[in-house]
Length: 67
Image 1 (tube, rainbow, N blue to C red):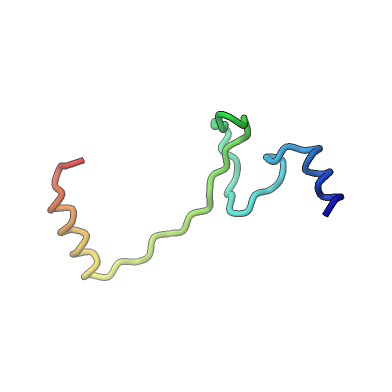
Image 2 (cartoon, rainbow, N blue to C red):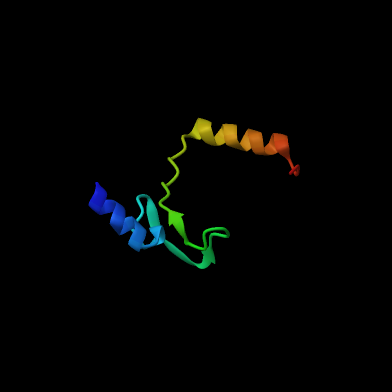
């Protein structure tokens, strides 16, 4: 809408609420745009079954100390 375009010209894009943002990270700024960095909402990892846990342990043992 044309009236919405005027709102975007008057304010910085960081002034608007962002979808998926858990909030602003106070100590971080984006380098080129100098806007505040937003932290995303994250999901809890799913519960693991016993066989999933065994597979993960085997993978950890296979990689050992490699980076």
